[in-house]
Structure formats: structure tokens, C-alpha cells
Length: 228
Ligand SMILES: [Zn+2]
Image 1 (tube, rainbow, N blue to C red):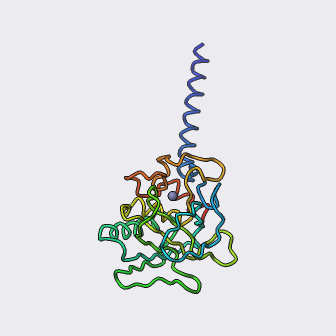
Image 2: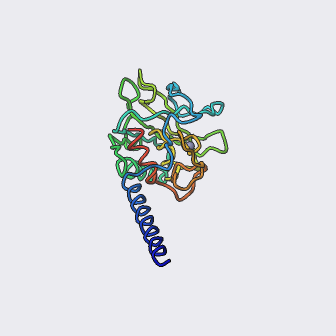
Image 3: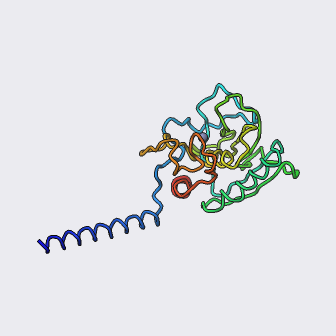
């Protein structure tokens, strides 16, 4: 009886040790909670919409975003944004691209400082932020691929992000940047789905959580291991 008890304890101890090891191993390798990367389930094919101006067409509900076309991401922001919106875009660009993902910020041009985006030839400015009215009341922001990389199924050369006037915060800036990079919502994941409002999706939650203004470990792993 004692032996069996001891054996049971040892088994429990061993299982605990294995569990602890697996938890540590999972954290070290960073298995994402879901592969929420473009192309996901129910996401439109990457076609390059040809809509290169920031006006959002409310008749198009299946957002044609793709993946960014490489680890260097260039960003441009319109002077549409108010002072707080500009600060939030600056913060998001500075803190959510290079660290902690393997993406690097290629350049960041601000229209209010006179910068112009590259909108012809190739490569073009990867991501453009605009602030415009969005005529669908339930949308905080929208992202679409304006110009696809020629000959690529997945990649976009220039994506447009439009944030609604009431959504100039860091969460929306992060969420739409995620789409421009190639992240989907949870239920659009490939294979294992998670709920759109799973808090582990951080700024990619839908609807957005007002304090989740970063990608978090799962999205970072998806960017580093499945998009790049
Ligand atoms: Zn979204």
C-alpha cells in the first residue's frame, strides 16, 4: 500500500514535471493558439483591389487584404489624423512592427511632415494610414490590398488602412496593421479556430478590446513563423 502510494506520488510528480516541461517548451517555441494568417477560411483571395483611394466601399464586405510582401514594412500616415490620432499611429508604428516581431520598419513617412508615399512602380509604400468617415456604423476601421505583388498569390505591395474618426486609438491602429501584415480574425484561422473575442488575440480581437493595443505572443508567432 505504501509502495503504491509512493508510486502514485512519483507518477504525479513525474507528470507534473512533464507538464511543467511541456509548458516551458511551448512557451519557448511559441506555438500560437491558432494560425490566424492570410489566407484564412472565408477570406477573399488576394487580388489587389485596385481601390487606391481611401474611400471605403460599403458594398464590399469580404475584405480583400493579403500578406505584406516581406520583412521590411514601410508605412505612411495621412495628415487626416488629429493630434491624438497622430500620436497613436506613431506609437503603433514604433512599438508594434520591429519589436517583438521579426518585421523591421523600412521607413515611416508622415504627411504632416511633408513625406510622400510611393504609389507607383514597385515596390510601393507597404501600408498607408488614413482617417476617413466609414459609412458602415459597426466598423472601427478597414484594411484592403490596393496593389498586389505581380505574380504572387499571397502578397500585397501596398495596403490601405482607413480608421473611422472615432477610432483613432492604438487598438484600432494595431488591429488594422495586423490585417495589413496578414493576420486574420480568430474564426478565420486555418485548422484550429478560436473565438473572435478570445483575449489571447490581443489587438486582433473582434470586436476590439479597448485595452488590447498589442499583438501578444500568439500573433507574434504567427507573423514570424507563418507569414514571414
Ligand atoms: Zn478585423
